[in-house]
Length: 440
Image (tube, rainbow, N blue to C red; front, side, top):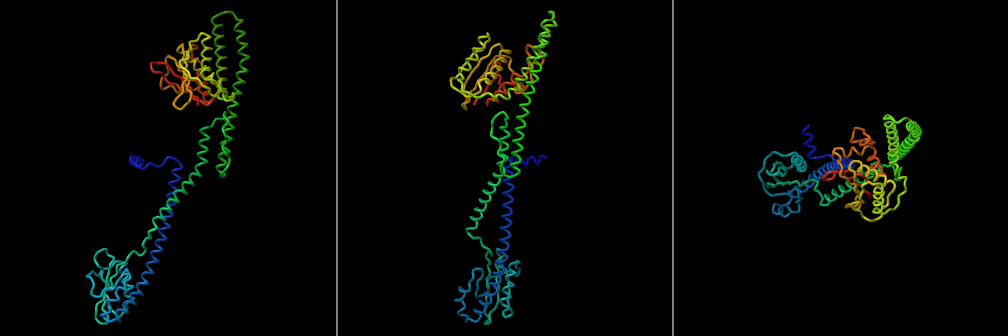
């Protein structure tokens, strides 16, 4: 296991599907191209070798016949004319060598032997060196020695333009493979982007149901899934609204009966329990409806005046809510949903700290950042994300004074997303909590 892990650490396999397909297709195409080139080169080598050996036999036979008939004094003048590059004729005994020959040397020797025939005894030797050069020694009719010095060149020399053609082919393979993979991966990337942006409550464009049959089928299935999710969410709100409506009547009757009962500790507890039940019903419906915060039409508001108005409303009721700093400027948002978010956060700060401060700024990206600050006990770092979940409460005693329903922050977070923003909780230096709404 350690060996495999170490190997993967040295040569990691690409994580993206596009990269893997690109490498697999490119490797396959390059292998096929390499095999094709190798087979063609082998066929060309065999053909060129056959032609060379056949040409060698006829040329040597003709050259030896010419030299044998020339006077000895004139033979030296003909040597340059008979030179063929891969072999030449030398008047004399030649160089000392060894009798052992390579396979190629034996083939060449056989052709020369066939060209000479039985007229001239011939002896072959391999010249020490690279193992390719050999000499054939024979004696002409007048008794003078003649040596055939054979130094075979590559049978299939590479043309100077061939490397450039190979590079061009490699470039074409890379480009074509990239285009094919890009066309194949694009529908999958579109599907992933649509899944990331999935929000049945927003009027986002539907996935295009076009292209190959498999892609079109996946797009239709995704759009149908989105429609079903939207339908289920709408049914959830309708069910909770119906439950709330149906519960209102018995709760009201029970409250009336409790009010006319004789005063007693049990009566007070019963009234409080009924109020708690009514509040739970209202909060549950509010949480379900918060997912549909986009039913309100966006409008342009002055964010500074909006925050001041909200703070004044709390101050009129004797609540310690102050505006620490603000910016002036208009933003487009859903004001009722934004007010509900801020109200939940301010109520939460007042509940645990007794006071709240509101700060409005712009961050480095130009987004409007609204902070609701308090100096309460804060939230443990490992539970900052958990408190955003519905029905989660740090206070597990379920006491009416501190427990609550556990839906306030969940509603605020869901409404913040519905209006195109985000909600984050952070502990403040020196104690307290900072609830930050980012609106882009």
